[in-house]
Length: 272
Ligand SMILES: [Mg+2]
Image 1: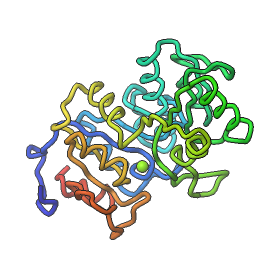
Image 2: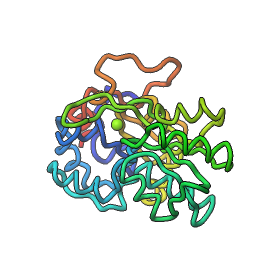
Image 3: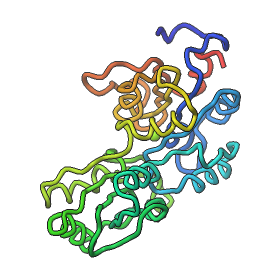
Image 4: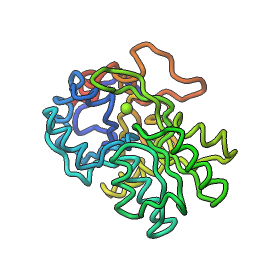
């Protein structure tokens, strides 16, 4: 596919769109340039949101979008790594017990299918947000080593570009927060979020579409784009998040189908 070719509407080589959120649509509570216009221009195309962020519940993400000024999406159209983790664990063991480390939204997602049990958990689940301290680390390590709990990581991001106490900052991602558990126990976690296929698969099921008919739009080559490429989903990288315009793609990666500075450019190239 040649990104220099402008496409007219009827030529779109996909019939559904998957979108990442942070770094694509907004930074904290600030919309990214062109994001609202882009969302209006794809209102007629089936689309769904897939985010590695396990901190908020889908309903809270939808509220956040409305608060920023986007049209409020249906809760069902937001697939978070926290929700995907909870659904996957329920498939492994209905009514599972867990010990979770991370923000409130992760605990709430897990509570939909399982119950907290610090002394006898089936799973030690590490997500993002506050919660990791000496006591939590000790509890988790003992559950894994002594009670054979399985270590689970909601998403592999080592860092996230977000807001902390009112300031934009680089925060530790779940991939970093799970590291002390790996070191202390020698166990590898099962990781759920992008680039693993589960979030995309849940999203495509929800829209009832095949991978070859989808476009994934994301700001991270190593998660959003790579994961979509594994499944043969078409890809568009927007350089409004962790990757700036001109920054080189990770070594050995195939380029995305569209590589643009922002959604304004993508809208133009797609003829939307
Ligand atoms: Mg992102």
